[in-house]
Amino acid sequence: MAKRGKRYIEAKKSFDSAKEYTLDEALDIIEKTASAKFDETVELHFSLGVDSRHADQQVRGTVILPHGTGKTQKVLAFVKEDRIDEALAAGADYAGGEDLAAKIQNEGWLDFDVVVATPDMMAVVGRLGRVLGPQGLMPNPKTGTVTPDVKKAIEEIKAGKVEYRTDKANLIHVPTGKVSFGKEKLAENIRSLLTAVAKARPAAAKGKYMKSVTLASTMGPGIKLSPARAMDLVEK
Image (cartoon, rainbow, N blue to C red; front, side):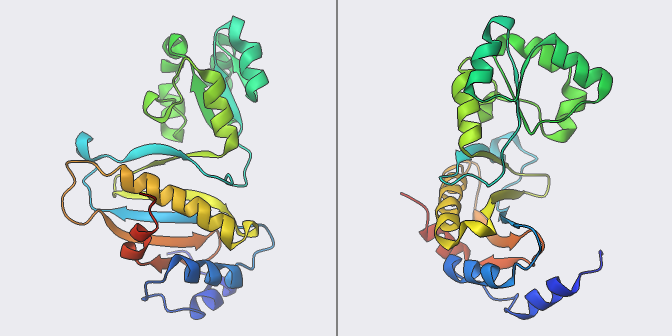
């Protein structure tokens, strides 16, 4: 286990790590304990009562956070030549086809955070699966990153759209903003995320869905939220 720094240890002493807090209480703790010299990201971590080994119990989707994540996402768009200008005008940082695919394959170029593609470009993108897949960068129709409406996809990503998905341990980790956002904006982002994950519950999932919910800043310890109270925040 990595050795924890003094700031982390001091932050953990300031609250009861065994207690489940309300969202308001957890955000208070984060505001008081986030002491890094940079603007820390606030992340929400879920442990879900699903078995993601089964396709019908995987939880995956996207949500547009009202106030974004505080990070500008670099978007690469795979489009036909006649749509390059459209993609760039929508906010894509890079747009193209075979030229960009060759750069990724031959140079290992990965200077982007999200990849979107039109369906007619998936034959090109498919060849990059071994490179993009392990990085979590492969576009997918389920997350809206493979779509004929590439303009809308790019605009949503730039507006603060984030993806959530269960990993092999049935956990979800999603950034919800920066400490500098303040409690109100962070709470609104978190409520949007909680709502999305709650509504994505698979029909095949049995028993308790949200087993645990934890909030943490980049350099800080995890603060447990009450799953029941977290569910109360879900927009009906």
